[in-house]
Image (cartoon, rainbow, N blue to C red; front, side, top):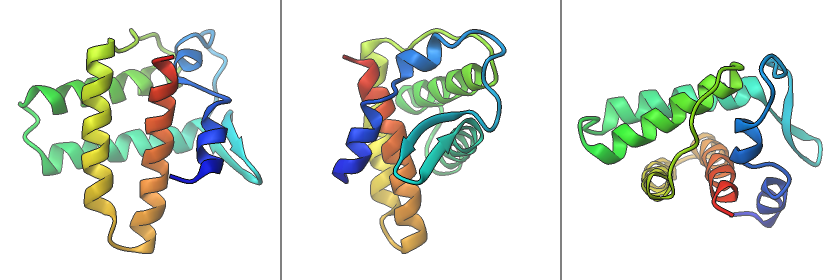
Length: 132
C-alpha cells in the first residue's frame, strides 16, 4: 500500500465517523484528503454499497465472516447517512479486515480494479485506525 494513503488515514478513523453529531454529514462532506484528492461521504457510501453487493454476489453470506462484514458496512452507511450504529468489536474487526483482503486480492487484474483496490485499502486503513 502506498505510504501517502497510510499517512492520509492517520488523519481520520472509524472512531471519528461513529462520533459525528447527527445531521452534520452531507454527501459532499470531505472525510479525508490526499494531495488534490478528497474522499467524500458519497464516495465512501458508493464504496460500501459496492462491497456489500460484491460480497453477496461472490461469497456465501450465510457464513459468519461475510455476514459480519456486511453488518459493518451497513453500520458505516448508517453513520454516513447521519444515523447511529455501534462500533464493531475487536474480533469483528479482524474478520472484516480478512474479508477486505480477500476482496482486494480478487480485484488485482486491471488498472480500473487497481483503483478500486486503493479505495478498499482506504476503507481498511480507516478500520485499522479504529483499533488504536
